[in-house]
Amino acid sequence: MNDKQLRILFMATPAFALPSLQGLLNGPDQIIGVVCQPDKQKGRGRKLTAPPVKVLAAEKNIPVLQPASIRTESFLSEVRALNPDLIVVAAYGKILPGALLNLPPLGTINVHGSLLPKYRGAAPIQWAVINCEQETGVTIMQMDEGMDTGDILLPATILIGEEDTAGTMFDKLAQLGGRTLVQAIALLKEGKLAPRKQDNSLATEAPMLAKEMGKLDWTQDARALHCLIRGLDPWPSAYGFLQSLRIRFFRPQVVAGEVGEPPGTLCQADKDGLLVATGRDYLLIREIQPEGKKRMAVQSYLCGAAIPAGERFT
Image (cartoon, rainbow, N blue to C red; front, top):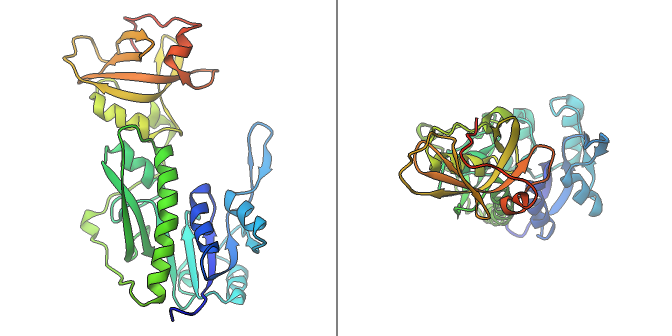
């Protein structure tokens, strides 16, 4: 089977999937179609915008399907007509029905942004950072009808650095996912990809993020806040209020020290950043976004405005 050119249907929507699609396009198999979510209105002008995967597929003259629902008989008929050997999914955005998952002879595999069974769900990359993990990765898995519960086919690990955010890890894991997917399909064709059941007792959830998560509780220790700020960067971002001004926080750094001030107290504001007391140790905030302004280094903001030390964030 390793010499056979597979007919692959690719289902994905966001930029995370682009390295996976490009990896398949560079390989020996045939991409017979791409399925992605419908175009959405974005920005202030509410302009109808195509998903990143659709843009790349169109550039490569690959047929694109954008069904409003993937649970209709008409969509299943379209997929049957394409006659795929394998469906590959990478952040499509919806749960796939069993009738679709089991349609190709080789079934459906998925590029998931965590080391399963940890972080099943919609936001695995963000939660790994929020929970102060030191490593994460991607898992190529055989899909079933559960939420990321299928058999593990091929995992790959990557470290999370102290300066990494959900945004930087998104890019790193997208690239890792593309490389690992290509390896997995090559092994699949050689009959060397052995499915491994997930240990459900080790499973953790990664639900969608909410804007309310960004309001910081300064009574927490600096390390927990450091991870939360990074995990919510770029969206929805962490914030606090100084008097009535909402300030979003980025690029935090833990500064060890015995804290004598109430949590949330701004102890120092200079070119190095905003030094804030927490429940344990201090947190140095090096970039901020005051309400109505762009994200910037604290040093840049202080060139035109003052933030008085001694104030408390609420």
